[in-house]
Image (cartoon, rainbow over all chains, first blue to last red; front, side, top):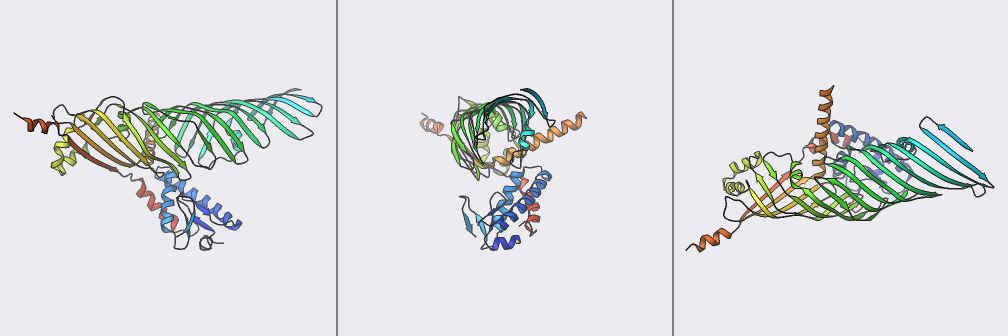
Length: 86
Length: 320
Length: 43
């Protein structure tokens, strides 16, 4: 299961906090989400260290960017916490 | 039976046990246990690191027939320290007295005091008292009292119940906040302000973060504003000569009334509308000064943390 | 008599000043995040 397949199948979606979220219960998608989020955190930490800012700030900027770049038809989590197709 | 054990090098423990019919009772005393030892077994949030020295006294009862364990735990944390992301804190003291009965832990007292938090502004003497309950992965903290010192004054929070993964709201009360320290956060030359503010900041906290809606800050007594020799203001005077008279009025403004309204969204975008009425001794007419300040407060605090971190690095470099 | 000046003297001088501060951390970080977006294992 690749990340783009999981997104087009509506299993995973982007959240404002910069991390992937589970849209529908699916153990394979959940496992993929956990590994991708762990990799993302590692990148956020490196970027935060390099730019001498906090991980939370980098992750929040990433969240806004990822939601903005999400393809039409893929899911994003709204500020009220519900999943919505872009 | 009395025994003193050395459980893997960190946990030193003395204990007494009593067997009577099918119930074992006993007392365990853990001294100087590193908090990190205990937390290593718990799943902490990724960006949180915690350590410190703990003492714990446990009175337990184990019913062999029912295979049921219950225990009363009371203890204290001596010098808690750690960080959450780039926010550093240390010298935190803790105290608790709890009762464990499968599957619930309930603490009629879980309180923290002292401490120094460098969040960009120094937060000192944090006092937090409340009751704590924990079962599987839900917990709740009934906060009875919260106060902390900052910006020359204090912030306090009315009692509120906090549940894991649930939004909560309340009001932050600010008292005797020094305008001079507040303005100093901007690190802008040529701007001096005196006076103190009290305020009420209604807030709500949810999965997105903290937001403040229509917070009100009002002056506590009179004060003086001097905007004289600030590069940005001087440049404004050159680029817009029409403003010179008005901006010069701010060179020395004795204010009697100062009110401001604060809003902040979870991403940190903050807006402060301030209105001041006062007099400039060299100008006959009264002065009404309306100031709108827009900035991302979380990023301001982060850049201040970076500055304090940089100055520490420099100090260490020099002292080598 | 100088009533007009008197009236004028009471009319307040109103000063409106708006200040917006942008923290530049955002721009440098933005470029770094582009690399993550282009990595199909991460986005």
